Length: 137
Ligand SMILES: [Zn+2]
Ligand SMILES: [Zn+2]
Image (cartoon, rainbow, N blue to C red; front, side, top):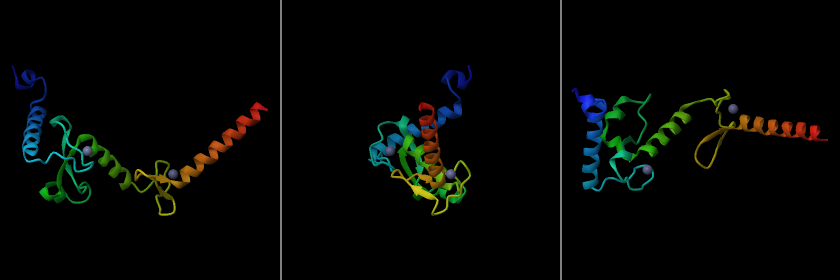
């Protein structure tokens, strides 16, 4: 029987998981299993991830390897931050409006909103409501 069959998963995946488990245990013994992003405890190796404080992608690959830039976090905190960073790295909204200072609204979660789209949506909403009103009369 080959390794993958015996393990029930790809050998590379299994090795990686083993390393994460090992690292989690060491971190736990050192009292380092607090999430860098939300500050709460990380309960087990399944939700534990190795995170980067400063984004390295498209910035500097040294940041990827810099141990001072590495922290532990919940998997979901890590991926939420990653998608947020991906969003903020974009310079245009999904409709193609530029994220200029005057066209950008930051909501309370720190996400950017396109003002032009918000205005269009509001206008569209009013237009539809008017149409509906006409139909009702
Ligand atoms: Zn967290
Ligand atoms: Zn827009």
